[in-house]
Structure formats: C-alpha cells, structure tokens
Length: 68
Image (cartoon, rainbow, N blue to C red):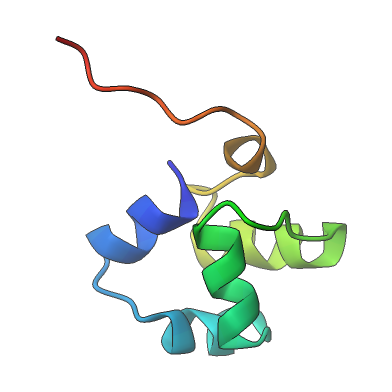
C-alpha cells in the first residue's frame, strides 16, 4: 500500500499524518506524491504509524496500472 492510498483510506490529512510521524506536512506531501523518499528514521516512523501497511518498498515500487 502506498502512503497516498493509506492517507485516503484512513481519511488522514497530510498535516495529521505529519504530526504522527513528526515531519513537516510539505515533506509528507512530497513522500505521498513520489517526489521524495523518506530517510530511514522516517521510514520506521511511517511503518509504525501505519501498523506496517506502508513499508519502505512502497516508495521504490513503480505505480501499478489498473488491470484492463
């Protein structure tokens, strides 16, 4: 699951999630948009905050295209 998918599925704002992982909302925006990859410490915080639903691998895997 990507960070964007997690935020949408849980009705979380960037600001709310940023507080959960102690990051700036713009930084969370960049992670969710695929513009930046979180550093190790932030990856651990993201995994913990999402109960393991968003993992480091989700930041490296290409976006999946819907099946036709």
